Length: 184
Image (tube, rainbow, N blue to C red; front, side, top):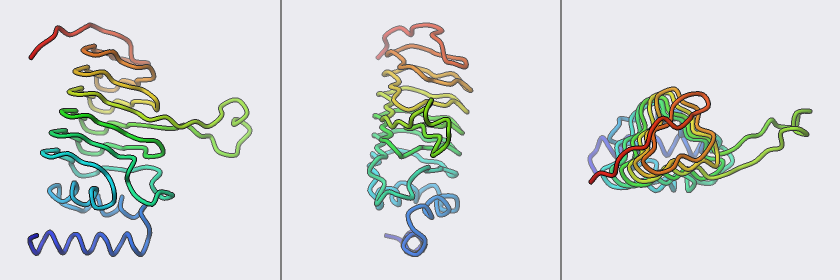
């Protein structure tokens, strides 16, 4: 481990030890891109080889967790700048997934101890992005959704239902636009 990498790693762990796992978000803002994967792995996330995670990554709802085991990212994925993962439930990105800048992946809904809780009870579900899918900039994928293999979610879309394999969806809420042909 190089001296610079070790210094970043020691500093990050000292901040997290003192202020709790939620302090990792602050550290992720200043860590160089080449350090993010190893630091997430150190706290229990599973991040595959050749995966690129850009700066500005936000991890929501990690303050009560002991580690980041709810975050699973496969091989050769791309996570663009400013992506947000809600880790109340599991976020699973299979191999070759690409997330453009400012994508939001949610896993739960909870209005808290408010009168609306009688109408909108809290829930938690895993969100899965299958092999080779691409989610465009500023799109939001709601909890419990599975985005199928080699599918495309257009920029700015709100995905509330599962997306079948090789489909393009767009809009708010996201609707089927077309089916992609099979390719190698």
